[in-house]
Amino acid sequence: MFRETSCIMPKEKIIPYADKQCIGNRALYQLIISKVDNHCRDLLRHCNEEGDTALELLFVKCANVTGVDTDHYHQLFVGLRAFHDESATRFIDRFLVARTCAERAQNEYSNSKLVSFLLTGFSGHKNP
Image (cartoon, rainbow, N blue to C red; front, side, top):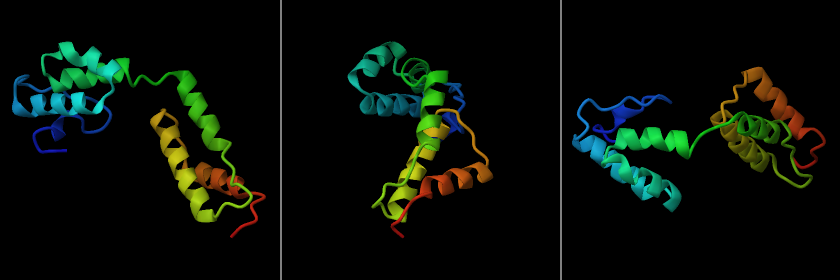
């Protein structure tokens, strides 16, 4: 992020701008509007070009993670198996993508669990 917009979201928590009309807040709004689909864009039109307000609304209305989502992505991740003719590199790539999706859906895994899931995914795999 740019220096003017980086203070808004240090992790998963949104910190509102003190000055709602500052250039960073307006630039963030323009960035968000340019990257979302029409449905979300329509929801964000009434934010008065305030990026922090738009970002909060976007999280609530368009990026809300429910318990169903959390369970769904957990099941996809732990059920991942290497295909019979799939290379180890390709499986690890799919594994990392599935892990990222599961963690974004508010699942947390210890290192030992991740290793266990990876080895389980390789079980029965024939191609080196």
